[in-house]
Length: 253
Length: 233
Image (cartoon, rainbow over all chains, first blue to last red):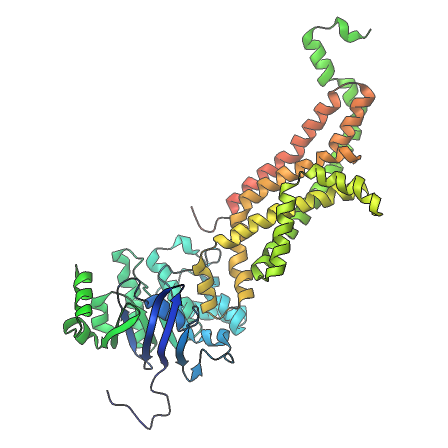
């Protein structure tokens, strides 16, 4: 990859370096770098407990890192002067268990932050919600409650909710692993569509076929460290590290 | 010698508990007591639940000293028998120069007890909302206070409704304790009619009125529980 030295935009949209995080005496992230170029889709793989979720949550400070630096689009997320609530608007997040608000309709799930954080009028926010629902292929679900939707539909609403804020990057924490196999495809189709629209994403996921098709970069995390990173091609077909090979062998079976 | 001596057991039973003359004589008075019970009950439910909700929200916002006082208040008023609180306020407080009307004492005591239980119920609701709800809301830039208000509390209220309605009913029934300090609610009036008439019919009427007052509440609580499901079938 050639770096465009004259480009006015920074090379990395998200630049996390040396991120450390412990829970009690357990060191979940030992010193992790995660570099994401604008418009790219980065896949984060690794065994459960390897720190994928924690790393993603550190990137919008849902978890407070113990050390390291995280720069998002030239904003130092760890600086005490940074308004983290404003910064989080720029960082969408999609969760394994969707985390839709069960007491609100789909429309209100999407518009809550638009109205309360962005300050949009209800009419504008509803229009934006309709636009997002069309984008994820669920234009007729605005009035439904989350409990009335399938898991795949709920996750697409989760994506619509984060996308509505027009974030610079979307972090997805195992977006398909809580879904029945036949529902995975509909969610991945939406992700693919977002990628084609040039939306930057970091996805913790084991959907290897999808990664090979869509990921610009794969990062393998184990024991709180990045063991190996590279193109999907290289990581999946020609892994250099023994731990990577062992992990891939496990998830293929 | 009274007429009752010559009666059969059944007649004596009817004469004692279902005496039409006595009912006519004291009915209106006891019915007025029902009015007081209903108004005082509404006041207790509104005050107690609002105060409990406020305390739970305050506890969620945090601050160690504040939480300490809330927990102390809640634990004390959950463990004290309501009658003890009523008697202390009514017979004890005048000794330190605070004289409160009996109806106010009754309202304050039961509201405090309901507030304590309601706080615990709302707090349990707040803590049982999954952590993912906080994460999702905060990740969209909502502040802690906004998340609490728009995402967490509405769910905590829903989780709290079944135990809360039960608790509100069982505490409001304690309005009958007002008879011990001369509040003219149902039981107070029935009790004085009992002493005047030397007949238990006023008590029967009182019991009947309690049922009439509280049955709609029980039914309303069931409807409330049903209507508080969001799209679940």
